Image 1 (cartoon, rainbow, N blue to C red):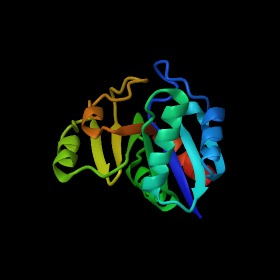
Image 2 (image 1 turned 90 degrees about the vertical axis):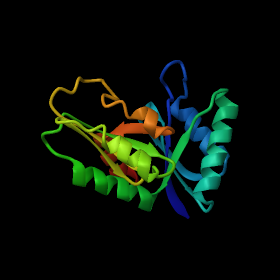
Image 3 (image 1 turned 180 degrees about the horizontal axis):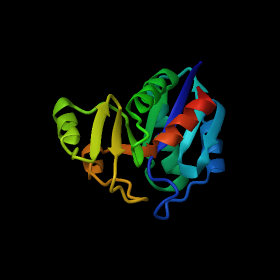
Image 4 (image 1 turned 30 degrees about the vertical axis):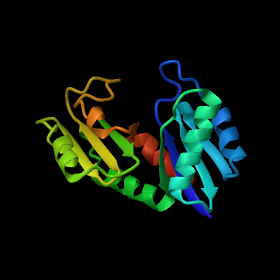
Length: 174
């Protein structure tokens, strides 16, 4: 069995309601085991023998059928997620005002990765690490501003979480 963590994009925002209990029910109905969620922003743990591509596609089909809207899924095996967590720890700095992590299905191509990192300025950095892209935000960051360097369009499809959520999930499920 493989432990996997799914991150759902844009749920419980903008009228796209998807309660955690419904997410757990749907994932369990697909036959995945040990299903758990963390906070109501679309963080899901599951176990399965299926490969990640099949699991991601099955989740997206089931979520859309249940909700009536597309729910993009960024799926990581436990080993892949450990890499994300290692990058968070390596890049984190107490001087940061915020550390957001964008999670993607696939790594960026080299040209797009360069364009994303070029969005960095004197106070903020964008760092690409495989399927995780880190927005390291310094002085001048405005609380609640999720995409201050305007990277999201270059990263689609992606979802983001703050570094504390990434760490908490690792502590709960790895």
